[in-house]
Amino acid sequence: MSISKYDVLVRPAITVLGVCLISFGIAWMRFSQFGTDPFVTMNIGISHFLSLEFGFIQMIANIALLAVMLRFSPKLIHLGTVLGIFLVGYLSDFLLKVVSLLPENYGMRIIAMLLGLVLCCFGVAVYMSADLGIAPYDALGMVLEKKIKRRFKYREIRIFTDVCCVIAGFSLGAPVGMGTVLTAFFTGPLINYFKKTVDSYLNEGVLQKQRIS
Image (cartoon, rainbow, N blue to C red; front, top):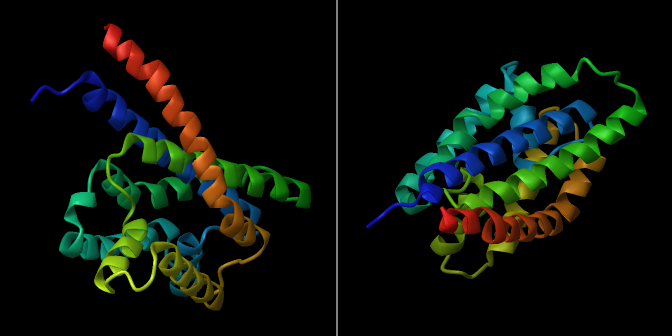
């Protein structure tokens, strides 16, 4: 079976770009101090409680979920999964130090929150379009849906796990606020919108050039 340049070069590059955008988005949302997505909120809370770097806690939490993936859904593991585990948290820590050089006034924090939300959603859309694995936390809902024999849908399970993560993070000192609420309501629609745009670009642009070459 032949492997195209798109599979060898473009898809991995798109995956890396998506992961970097997600990391940058998380950094902006952390800078805003208005809250982040549920899983990151939980890990921020744990990092505060244990006085450890967020990147390290994010990695350990993902490795724990990777064990679940290895047991129940190994086919979902690919390059994107590995990058999500070992790169996102540490890259976010580094980028947070960079953006923290900016003034921390209320207006700047609002801009950071909105920019972070958009970057995270666009990054996820790019990451998904490459189709090289999914994040362990996203896989958790799929595994639970399968194990409980579909008595609950993925959306319902995801809401439950998100609420648990937010409660855990808040209890351990993570900021929860406008950013958390906006993430809950707008992440899905924004990702769907961006993914359609990215898929259209790839289908009409990159893939067409690949065929010509």
